[in-house]
Image (cartoon, rainbow, N blue to C red; front, side, top):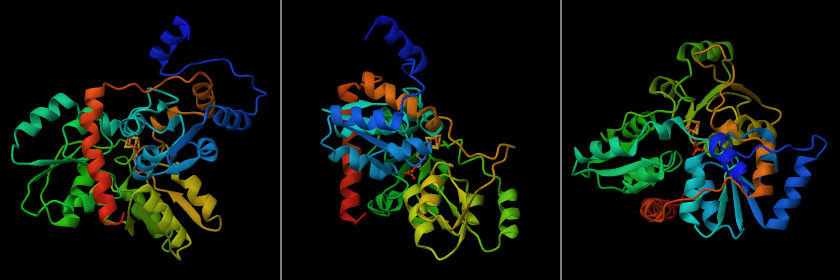
Length: 332
Ligand code: 13P
Ligand code: SF4
């Protein structure tokens, strides 16, 4: 790579090369993927084109498992930074590429390691359960990791008398506190996408569509979760929309999930839950930094690559492996 290209990646987070507009990117990506023995992993919040080209689409737990077991030489991780980092932590001999290095996460950013370290020192008796949406440095300070699909079981794997800190999502933490009857100390973090839903507008929408069920991600605020008919991770929401006899759903999570919901149940109606602002889309600006063009250039040039400090990687691996072991034990 030239020095100019390296500077460009540092500044923009991705390599901006001219792409022939007549190129069939789907065909090209498939071809290069095969040549290089690469795999594309995509989170449900990715744009539809990326989901359609992916080898695997899933929630955070599914993606971590897939990254751990893949034999591919290259993992192109189309999600956000902490997800690609998890893939590298679990499968360090693979080259992990991320189409846009700047695809971060407001929730992960809401928990800076230095501040969290001080916070943790105030509770020497507590064990730390961290939601996977955090940096490797936070994972390294944790006893176990969880995702939205296994959070309750992970928390319940500790004896009731064991005091716990839950970081960084206060909404998921409060939801799990309620479900388990615990009083975990919560770090005050949140996701910008799930905090924006407007309860008043949701209630109005529910009365306009009395037969529709409200399905919500546990990163939403308590008031929204209280009126939800079902609460779950992205995979759980998708499965519920497929299996439930209801024909209409109000979906309180990032809009990317609607692509798979509509694809698998085209006869059903999916209504994005309305946010507080006037914008009708519930897009995560971080997730949506990835584009099909960036997937193509990243695969072609094998950059940007996710590089990690080995000591941090090793320390962050332990609580993730613990999560995967507990999940298996409890049949998740
Ligand atoms: P899950 O896909 O695990 O439900 O997580 C949602 C999310 O916010 C990812 O950033
Ligand atoms: Fe982070 Fe929220 Fe975006 Fe998920 S949806 S990546 S939690 S900002």
